[in-house]
Image (cartoon, rainbow, N blue to C red; front, side):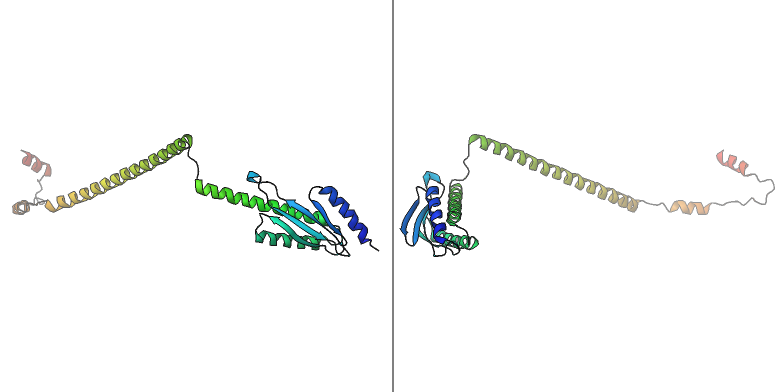
Length: 223
């Protein structure tokens, strides 16, 4: 048979040794006590803090202890609700074992988490309000980068304009060449009288002359 009283007394002695400055016994029958839990310090040594009150049930640790938030410091209502949910979960998971140290440790980690989130929110607010401080070195670095990017943009524009100009010139040349050929073809004049004079020429057919020599005719024409 489990000796619940003995297990509870042994745990109380251990808790007093672990938390000498924050452990306080309120009564011995039923045994109840408080343990103050504080987060790690933030800026200006600010902390969030809670004092947990525990009361042993008759069959603790086979039954969960009773617990409550006895006092609190710098905690929002939603944080208090989260801590109570955490205690309920941890108590359920650790039934059958002495668990006060486990519960307090879980609350300690939760308070540190809460404080860290507050710190991050404060830093984000300061950053948003003040912006990024500008010093001469960072400004000169930014200015050099900006000028380089601007120069590249100008070069790109000039190259595009140059290519666009060449393309337009080539199109103009091609069009003018075609137009020139069309105009030249339309303006060619043919002297039809040349063809008429050729019709008036009497071409002698000497194919029947046995003494006819085409070469003699060509020499006569040349002379």
